Amino acid sequence: MKINRMVILGIAMAIIALTGISWAANPEKEQGAVTAAAKWLTLIDTGKYSESWREANAYFKQSVKQDQWEKIIQSVRTKSGKVISRKLKTQKNKTAFLPGEPKGRYIIVQYATSFQNKKSVCEEVVVVLEKNGQWKVSGYHLK
Image (cartoon, rainbow, N blue to C red; front, top):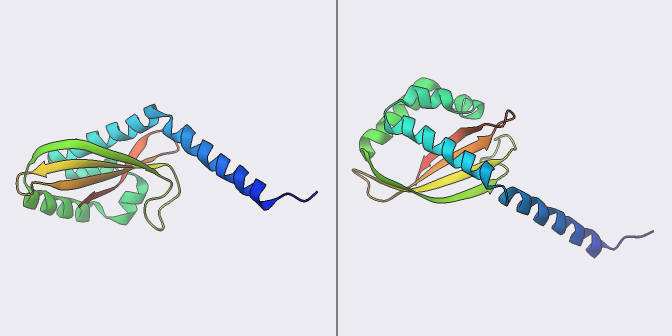
């Protein structure tokens, strides 16, 4: 029996769509990611840089050593100044964020942030769902 390529393509598209719906239809999982990102940012905001490194996931820790992270983030935050405001902007689902990063369920949480010395910044916190069901920070970027 020969199966039409269009039928196979249609089935594949339906599976992809349904998978996306089930992921998007789980606000508890997304809220957990946003909560983890916010808690982690609080560590940064209060100068607990070493604790922020310890609370990040293994990939983050392999990518940057603790002393390097502390120097980098302290420099960035010293230049930026204190947080004036932070508003949740978007959250995007991804299966991988960077090349070489392990596949998994990632959410990129973006904030519209205003710092004392930088009035309009997009802050990105990348969180990944760990095997134990906890969200951990995998990356942090200012744009």
